[in-house]
Image (cartoon, rainbow, N blue to C red; front, top):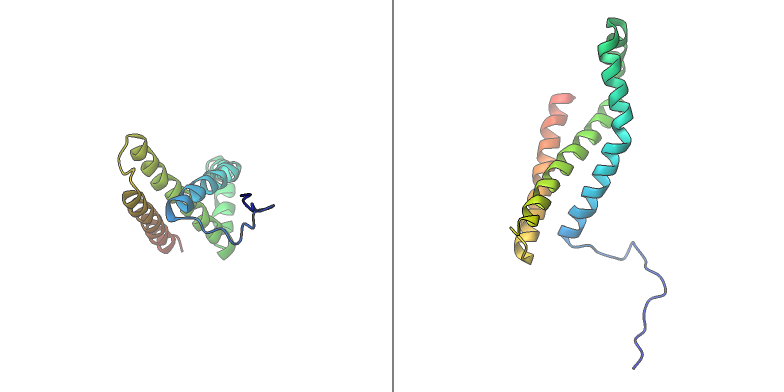
Length: 124
């Protein structure tokens, strides 16, 4: 009996379980943090260089689009840290069964979004 296998994967139809989604978002958040690193270093340099560059930076950060970018960066940091702690605990063989993995994934999502919301309220 020959199995009919798909020729291609339709990524829109694949539903990831919650632990898979958290793992994928962990990779995406790490990539986002890596790509935003030059921007953060430039902002740090501008804040430390002269008072004029610091004033220009603070004026730039008052725009809603720059605040939104900082909130996205904050989410990436919070999610990456929370998911990283989850992965470290799983490397220590804690929370490996399916129910515990789903529960810890939901905790990672809720804690990272909650911390991002708190930071976003403070930032805005």
